[in-house]
Structure formats: structure tokens, C-alpha cells
Image 1 (cartoon, each protein chain N blue to C red):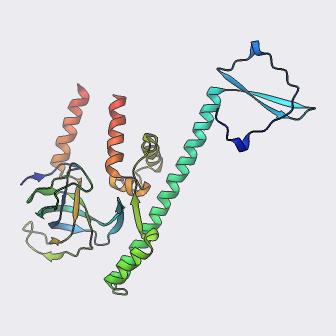
Image 2: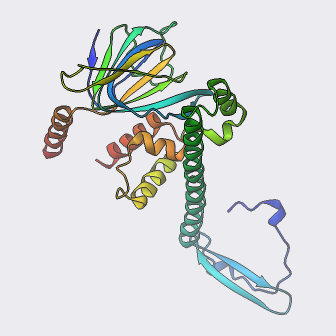
Image 3: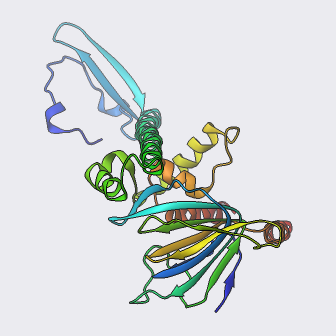
Length: 164
Length: 134
């Protein structure tokens, strides 16, 4: 397992390790304590990897969901700006200038999908959100999570091809 | 010249003509590859036709987009991305019963069929069911 240098510590211990009974392939040991007392915890690599990937997945889900909320707010902001233009409170020049000046508040940026896992995760999140409120189109899903629609559709099709 | 009616078919052009029964007049702003587009959604029925090709004639958003002059999309619902805001004028006698909104879009246009006509959708569903049965 890779451990960053700033997390590495030398701990004095009188734990006796019997090399003959050590199962490096399937398990690893965590030692907690000082010179006088220590507790060891034996964890299998499988359990550790599962827990680690679950943590990574939940962090990525959080990032995607926060982006979805931000895009929802951007849609509210642009809707208010459109209303101001329709009611002639602002001119078209002021409308364009406001969008260019505060693009972060109004513009939904569609980015490349860097990992196939993201497309799977987006699919799972959309399923959890459900279709009771609205039948979401692929275009709406791409706007929600700031990803390019063409890439999302082609990755999902590729995954469906693999499943067959 | 070709007419495209399937879900996902798209076109890209420098200028286009659009006719639709209903357009959501408040666009959202989408940025793709550093360029901002106003995105409009049309409903009930929409026809969009290329009246001026891109120069150079190279895809900007989707590699499968139609690019030739007079190519058109016709469907129940089409998403339209333009570089400038558009306003369409109201006309009558489009389908001999209903009024329509129509006009030219004098800037880069990307349009994509979101909802095809029901008969196209049913045809593609029956084809996919046949494939699944095999």
C-alpha cells in the first residue's frame, strides 16, 4: 500500500512477528500503542480495498451532487436574468455583459468524462433521484452533472455492450 | 439534402431556419470547449434546416452531425444551441390548424433530436425488441 511520507511514523514496539505465520498476501496488521502496551488489528486486504473504494465512491458522489446543486442554482440565476431582459429591466448588452462578467453564476460548463466509473456513478445517482419528478433526458443529465452528453451516451452504450 | 428524424440525429451550420409549434424562450447558457451557447428546447413539432454551411465545414460539437446545405431535422422535440440569443416570430397556418413560431438563426447552430415522432420511436423499440429476442 502506498503511504505518503508525511504520514509515515516509526513506532517503538516489542511486538513479536513470526515470519512463518505471516500471511502477507491476504492480510496486514495495524499496530496501535507505545512501548508498554499495544493493540494489533489484523485486516484482510480484500476488506481494506472494499472499504477504500467505498470511501472513494462516496467522495466522488458528493462532488458530483454538489456540482448538480450548483448547476441547479445556475439555472435559477439565468432564469431570473432572462426575466429581467424580458421585462426590459436590462438591455441585451447588459444581459451579455452580466453573463460574461459573472460566468461562474450563470454558465454550465460541460467537461470531458475522465473515468468510466464516473458514468456508472452518474447512472446510479440518477436512478436514486428517480423519475417521479421528471423523465430526465440524457441532455438534462449531462447538464446536471456538467459532463458532455456524447461521451456519457457512448460510455453507457459501451458498458451495455460489455454486459451482453 | 437529407432529412433526419431519429433520436440523437444532429446538425451543425453557420445559419439555419427553424419552425416550431413551441419554443422555451428562456435559454440556459452552456459552455462546451470554451465556447458559450444559448440552449433552447422546442416542443410539439420542430423543423430546422441548414441555410448556410459551416466554413470550414468541420464538426464542432458532434462528429456525427449533418453539415450539408438544406439538410434538416424534423421531430417532436429538438434541442437547439446557438451562439447568440434568438427571437422567433409568430406565424399561422403551419399545420393548417395551429400557429407556429419561426425565423432564421444567423449564428452558429447545433441542433439535436431529443424526442422523435411517435412512429419513429415505436419502430426503433420494435427493432430493439427483435434484437433482444435473438
